[in-house]
Length: 453
Image (cartoon, rainbow, N blue to C red; front, top):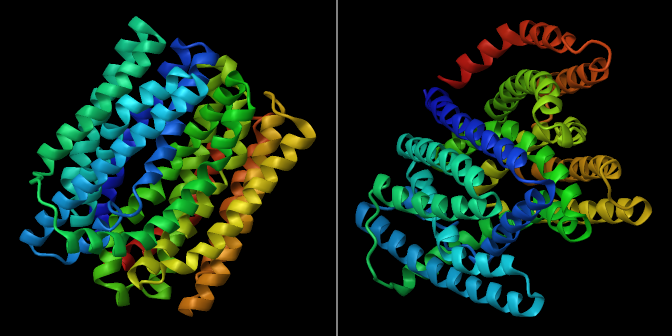
């Protein structure tokens, strides 16, 4: 039953992701590469400033599922106001950066940031309550509105239209979130509620801090050392990856409240079968994606054809993220999230070393940035190996079972084979996808049946 509900949520997220991908295609088509890169950089600096909220929003994930209605309202009101004050501080920091570097991007960031940050609150609240029906509705409304805004405003006003679309979109996300989530916000500061949010959220925040740095540090570093046109090429490759990475992200977001409430039921066997099932689905989707993007990108976005190689190389990180998300859920449910810090730190150091080595020896242009993608992949492999070792030592659970090894190995091998055949016979990718699906179809049905019990 829970996977059936999760699939509805995942489908809604995929609709949202498809429209977001179309937004990216529209932006890349209508903006020249310089402004495409500039627009991407603005979104990156906004994302990094979100780190100023040191766990108050994250704490909602832990406290809301266990609280009664009155206590939930108190946590939500206190989470809203403490977060809003922190985001105002973030705006002041952006103003200071403007006067230091004289870059107008920081003025725009200062104006939009409080709304940009606080818009996440309704999303966290709906996730924490397990109200994925309304969360799906929110995502669908916002994705449709955002797509229309981006298409119309960029077409009419180009770069200024992109900034305007972003501003209106984040404002509507907050408004619709408050309405759909039926949030009751009162100006009521309760000290022990704020302290509780911080204590419960800081552990998740630190883990998310390292995860965010590990997953986006290369974008942040490259933002300063790449020409904007090259950065745009890299960004388009990452956008293609995000379409597939949303699968495990949304499923495990949905499952997190269940992990917290029913931790004992998430045994080694159940977790291994979940990994195998999602790996199977991911492989089929990646094979279809490789086929579609290989045809689509050269025709629609010929300047961004090098982005395809970035997509091909980093597509393997989608498998890594499946392991990462399920371990995260288990650690959260057992209050052992702090054990992820070591592997997060290892992954971050490996990532920084990889990017630094490639930049030092090769520099960055349209071709060399592709080789940097290999370094990023190696860094993430180092991270997941360290995480699996730590997970086994701290929980006595082994996710690297015979079944998951066989499924993961065959899945990765299938992707590699399809990539090697692209230059010789593109349509063979679909044949490979069908053969792979038939190979595991009966087994996948069995996994799904067992997980739905």
